[in-house]
Image (tube, rainbow, N blue to C red; front, side, top):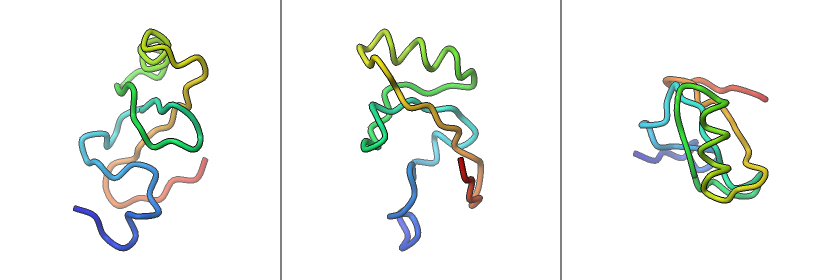
Length: 67
């Protein structure tokens, strides 16, 4: 469910809560890999042809996290 605040969120899909996600770049919200281990997420993104993926952690619940 999207709310007014979620339009500013990097990732709004709850299935990624508590996980590391890899995106194509800083201007993309397209998730190319996700998991509990950032190294494995990086390797999975690389296997999909993303040379320099952006890896972020998506916190659980309604928490703001600043990187």
